Amino acid sequence: MKDMQYKNIVAAIDGSKATLPVLTAAVKSTIHNHAHLDLLTIEQVGQITDGYITSTTVSTDQTYNLVKTTEERLEDLKMRAWKMGLLDVSIHIRFGNPKRVIAQDFPKDHHNDLIVIGTTGLSSVERFVLGSVTNYVNRNAPCDVLVVRTENNRQEEER
Image (tube, rainbow, N blue to C red):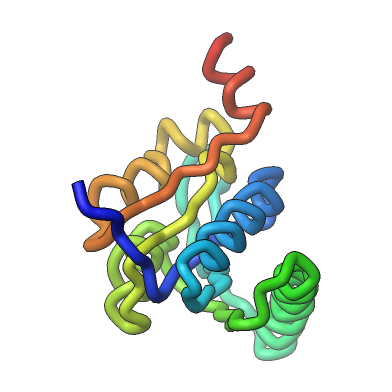
């Protein structure tokens, strides 16, 4: 098997406990491959209430504040990547369904050849109702997927 050299790596960041392990794995892979790293987070328009997806109307001010807060969080993660020795990092905020954006839309638009994603983000009930974003991405992405498991995920799966 030939060694694959990645050129454009995307790290799917969701703000969960997996964020720092995903960032670390993505930075290491990016440095190893002399590649570019995209830090991506998805903001959903709908939300889950009592197991059902509901649509919410968001004001312009709420959208602005959400984007500003998310951008600040991503800038912090970008600075962490710089401190780890990676300077070629871009941040991206997308709205929509995380499954589709991470697995299809973003890699197509940015020519990513590796997606780094964590195994946490939804509660057990949400995973049951919606399905795992990670499983969907792993099955449907047009490129390789590196799944980062955290210690909490391992303990949960053993129960």
